[in-house]
Image (cartoon, rainbow, N blue to C red; front, top):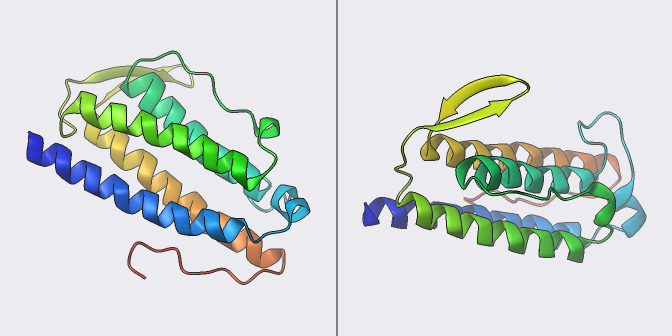
Length: 159
């Protein structure tokens, strides 16, 4: 199992590296643009998209995977890119605890409820969900920045 844990940790490190490039880029966006609402993008602003990504980790990894009580981050509590960086430092700690607890993403079935529906999952599916969800919304952040007049950079894992 240790090999699987090591692989998952390396995989998450790739996610963190890509996120770091995205956050460095977001630091170049003017603060009013960072908060600018645009109804064409699901969560409305670059800040909201980034907080939504973190909330997804908080829910699926913290609450469901680790079965911890979680205080979900509020959009309005995040005003600057430095706040987002601090938020993702907390997410990284949550993921470290999850990867340690699941020992290579092997875990018995996990029961959960969402939108009033009972279901089951496992650690591997939770891990895959949060990282693919992050990359989906990362693309929206880059597209929204283009709509705001910025030139997005390459944040792919392979760049």
